[in-house]
Image 1 (cartoon, helix red, strand yellow):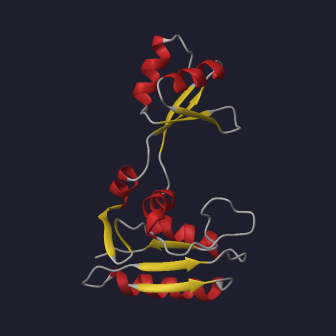
Image 2: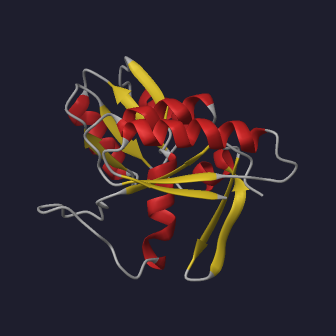
Length: 184
């Protein structure tokens, strides 16, 4: 495993990632590169995102407070640690919000003309909308990001949480990003 701390050092980060990726690709053991990106403004975050897309991690091991929390595929981790949600567009927004609330789901207006309904899958929402004669223009499953699933799972396992001024959530000042390898 290689761990890199980065803040506004994109050129050095690019060289390190390129070298490590090439070296670890041929390793006979599982490997991982973990980068702590502390809010750089020099394009480092964009570079890391591009690296993740080219070299996605396929396995994730999460340890919190010295105990194994999760050991599974990335897709399995996201599915197991995030609630089902659906993006829905309808001309009957108020009716949809009321219907969602009446069956125990929550609907949140995301400001782009759509709602995110939490607690069900698209088939359930589509069937319910049909039964109540609600016209739908969009019905799309929403998948949580790896970062959000990780933050949700490990929220109780952190001793210290950094935040930015005015940040009321658990927004960390930096983000740990894992990619490029088959973690053992």
